Image 1 (cartoon, rainbow, N blue to C red):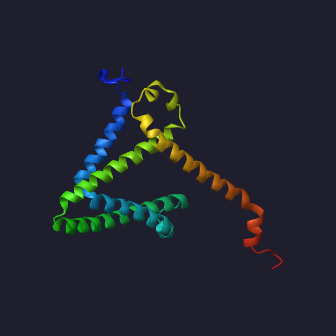
Image 2: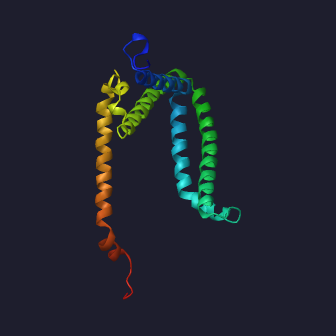
Image 3: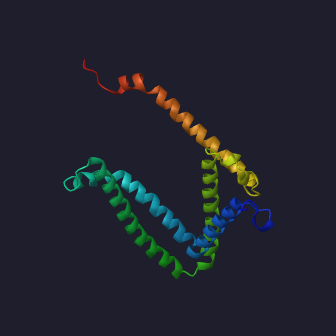
Length: 189
């Protein structure tokens, strides 16, 4: 069936992995490193601005949107998309200035490297998420030619996630009484 594609020995999941790599590589080449980095920075800054200012806009929207939660979501989304639009326009102008320098070949080559790195990050994160499903017990997963090469990276992410959750758990367990007493004023004060 789909487990082995045309007798090539590749499982369908291997073709999906290769598809993600080729797609991301192609996008990286077409857009170039400068545009890719500006796009990434735009998304991160837009998310940060939404986190910082979404609630401020939500307060202004409460006269039109009666639900507090809906106004917060609407405000955050408006800040996010507005920031993303403004930053994308700025990024496009910077990209045009860069193209005027004539370094497009190097820009596209480095864009390909960025695209490859992005593909690997996406694939490793998908395989990390797959560890929490029944996928590792499935035939198609175990027949994969490419997944064993990615497993060391998935194991590293798994270790980092475990350390992060362990640190958060320790912090959460330490907080309740002692920290709140030290921070919050009492009635006697």
